[in-house]
Length: 249
Image (cartoon, rainbow, N blue to C red; front, side, top):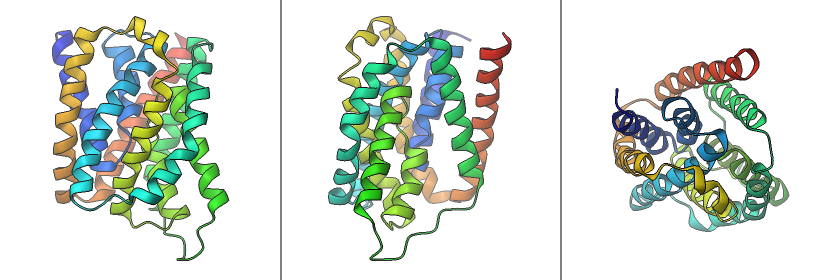
């Protein structure tokens, strides 16, 4: 299979995940870029942020049109993660590639386990704690900057449990958080763009953007729990493969 076809297929899957679940696409983008398209871990995390920024912004527009984005609360949540995302993005360039790969595999496994668990229940109205919301947003920003993941798989349950959002609003608002954090991290990763093959990136990103629109429509037709279980199974397989590659190959 040619590199172009691989880039198109992988990009479409990433976009579908982001559009349907409000996150999770970047957890597939990084291993796809490393193992299918030959990127180094450092270049893959930078490329993933570019892909996720463009795709999340597209999916954000679709959810905003449907009225599923809470702009004020989402902006405050995202603002808490801007500085941590930028600092972690700068630190990522100094870490060994094996450390980045192992850390990413651990996050992928965590995402899968979270998705296989019961859906988060909303916090009681009036019990939103600003300090907890800010610390959660900051942690999410640091994760985005360090590993090149948008963090939607963590943002969605955080918005439901910490800010008492219903699921549709959490998915739409998480895309605002992802876009903001990814942009902040990219600003500190200018050097990481040197290892990116733009002839591969362009079709990958284009397919992801189109996939995000299809993912939004898919979410309206297929049960959310079924989508999450299927995606979690893929993530567990990806995490196991990456850990095996780091420790046994």
